[in-house]
Structure formats: C-alpha cells, structure tokens
Image 1 (cartoon, rainbow, N blue to C red):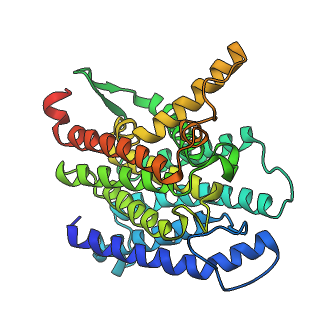
Image 2: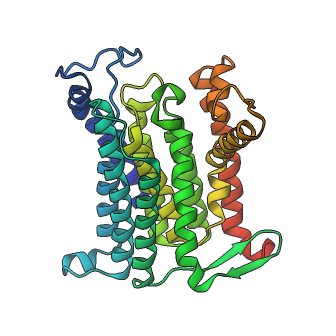
Length: 347
C-alpha cells in the first residue's frame, strides 16, 4: 500500500476523530448525567461529567479508513460489486473488532446509567474468545492463515497446524484483556492514565505498519495498523490528559481487537510482544501483583498495574505517558528490525 494512501487515511481519520468527538461528547454525557449541553467546557479541565464510549469514535474512524483503503487497494472488485481476497480478509477482521466493541458498548452503557455491574468477566472472556476463534476460522477460508510461528533465537518456525485455531484465539483474548488492563484495571477510570492506551497503541501501529511496509509484509495488516494509528490519533484530541472523553470498555476492546487482528493478518505473531512491549509489561506487572498477593497477602506495588503504581508514587499523567511512550518506541523499533531482518537473524 502506497505511502500517499496511508497519509490520506491518517489525515482524514485524525480530522474525523476531532469532529466526531465534538459532536458525540454532549450526547454521551447526556447518557451519564441526564443533561444535554452542546457546550463541552474547558478542554483542559475536568468537571466530572466526562463520559466513556470512546470506542464509538475510534470505530467510526476505523470504518472510514478501512473502506477508503479497500477502495484504493481493491477498487476493481469494489466497483464490480465483487469481494476480492484482500477485501474479504479485511472485512472479516473488521467484523470481529466490531463485535468486540459491541460488548464494550453494552458494558459502558450499563455502568454509565448505573443499571448494574454488567456482565460477569468469565462470560465476557468466553465471548471474546469465540469472536477471535470465528475470525481465525473465517480467514482460513479466505486465503488461509499462517499456522507456523517464527520464534526468536534461531529456533526457526514452529508449525502448530490444526492446534493453531484453538490456541491463537486464546493468545488474542489474553492480548485484548492486557489492553483493557493497560487502559484501566476493572474498568475504573481512576485507575487509568488518560490517553495512555491510545498513545501506546498509536506507537504500536506505527511500528507494525512501518515494519510491514519495509519488509514487504501483508497489505491487509498494514491497512489495519494505519487505520488504528489514525483512529488513536483522532481520539487523542479528546482523550489525552485531562480527558473529555474516556476510552471506556468499548474503546479498550476496540483497540485490543485492532492490535491483535493486525498481528493475525500479518502472520508475524511474535511482533505483538515487541511492538506491544508497554502493554505486555503493564499486564505482566498486574499479573505478578495478583500472584504475590494471593501467595503472601502483601502488595508488591502501590497500584494494580505499573502505570497506576507510578501515579500513586506521585508522577503525573504526562510523565507516566512519557515513560510508556519511550518503552513503546523501543519495542516498536525492535518490531521493525524483526520484520525486516527476521530471515537473516532469527531463522
């Protein structure tokens, strides 16, 4: 996919993100407070009325970017009302992300309206797994899925064969929930850092798309990464600290779904651990905190996650975002090197 098309998609998504936020925030706020006021207020000050539902803005931007990319890339098939392989693969993955976002939207609505505690975590995880499994099976019949995983340290490819289909959706589900924890543990906005998840996903997507472009990787994965980058950038107009719009569970599931679907389409699965280093480290710290507490009944950190721990140590949102941004850039750089030189150094 040409750089000019990517630039058009990025620019349009960022503008669209700003416009959609300006239009939708008053309506989202009405769900939370019961009052409608088109005046948003001071962009750089919170008043307690900031709503969730960031996933709506992100997914509308992504849909625009995906459709635009498909038209540019596969215009012949679109004009003749046929679905080429590229289009089918992209729309199957997009359908999976939309279903994940729908789960998050229902949770955001229930919590903002104070209608209850929402769906039990076990049921949500099962639904996420089934959606990821459905996407993997769907892609199998639309050009196939890479079932061999390239490992580091000269271990070469490990062929999973049929085991790939039950196992990789599990990996995707873990990745999606790591993104949720990275945004805010337990869905509580006071445990999150405004804009952190969007910033790290933007850097993740930039690294993945750059590596795929330089290494002649999957165009479908590249389009997904570019659209994720543009949507995250557009959301940050309203979601960067101090936020006027929270990601919510809808946004966290949307971003987690976009990141894992892009990796699935790329066929370079190890890249998630590199480009998503900030997400993985934050999630691993949360898991370690849980294990230590269960065994020793003591807290290892002041917060459930690393970013919450840093906040409670007195670091501001911008400092925390800066720390994780550096971590993400290092991981994204490693991912680019992996995608370009994997054949020389890793096989």
